[in-house]
Image (cartoon, rainbow, N blue to C red; front, side, top):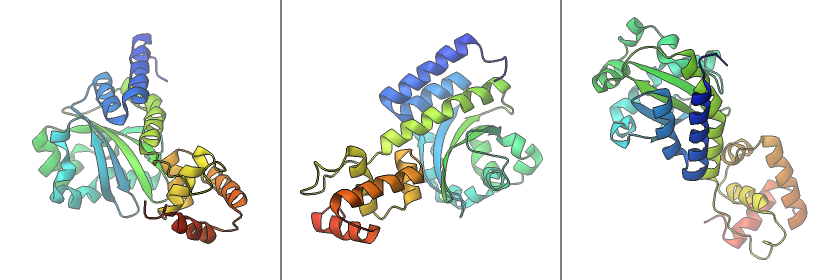
Length: 247
């Protein structure tokens, strides 16, 4: 961490963490934006294998570019996708848009000239919050001038794991007890079973619950043992008979 992060900065960062825990991702983003000093803060879900945007949470809904089909169609031009594939934008590491592409290059991209510049966005600080082999979630802090300081990078990298945890808590599925077996399964096992019923893969379950795929597999083994099952297919049949699949 750079020497630019003062004790006062760390105190304010702690306030962001408290906001994320108490109120959730959207409210925490707003406080993070004020801490770093930017105009709009968003956390966008992506399908990075196809370079497609799938959703966003922002502190300024009126500036949500996802509402525009033209922007979604041009989003694949964002240098962040190429940077992620090349390893220049790694999980938990912040990078500025103008570090990933020079201004001359950016001004030749329609997504930048048609959407960012008219709205006053000159630069962004990006950080991958969550990622698996197909999906990702990227934090973007937009401002009307180029460049971000070492302090800005450090604060975003410090707070990104807490933001990931806030999303994991926020997206945790409601537990639908399996009829006749609810006392046997723990709350986490119920969550895993509910997501299996929704056809989620082990990696998708891990991403949603903020755990590793290996831990998901361990929970599944316990579920099989407790319910007298031997496979995921048998579990799906069991859940379909309890009404969980249609939940």
